[in-house]
Image (cartoon, rainbow, N blue to C red; front, side):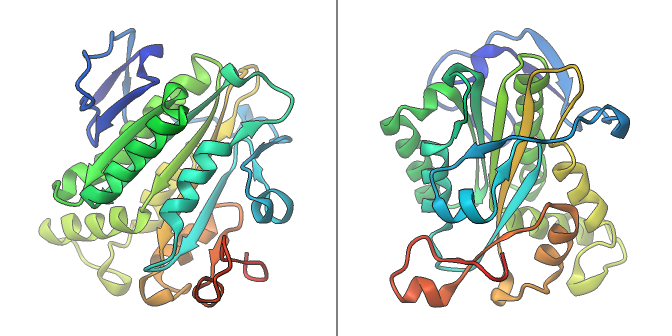
Length: 272
């Protein structure tokens, strides 16, 4: 599958497979890219050295979101990770760089209709939509579309970063929905299940998404990922957060105890 892209992708809202759903005209296609992305030579990777200021002190001071890296948020059911994602998107900025050099790609994976509308209204009312691209895959959409959503979003991010030279922040929520869709499709194909029914290639499949972040020598842009996943039963040893932690650079853990105590954001410092 290919995705036709141009700078006009910013300010638009797409469904999970790259179709415009904001009522506007289709985007003018400049170039087409494979949604699987192109392999990035490890030797071509530049060393990340700067960070993106999120406006969340517990993140900026304790576990900085470094440009070109991937940092997940481990959340749980009922915790305010959607609100946190929107606030980071609204307040994120580059240190010592122009605003037009920064872009956001937001991917909602398997989100309820109310959450999708919340994301859309929040981006529109804050003005962030002008420099953002939204990909919204609803919970009512098929599992196969759910597997394509992060790939379409990351393809748009790679275009903006490595062709247009922007510093791109990709926010993906909820990766648990993606992994469960992968398990469903794998079971339908009759593949041998692994731990907790997930396919044995879950690690390498997640790596094909997370490793698309990076800085490339000789190119101005960077691609940074902030992925959000809800831990089933708040179990950090579950295959989804466990394998994600192996691939990414640490993690930010939200605490239900802090949330019940009325502390926002409920970031637990020690396991983060």
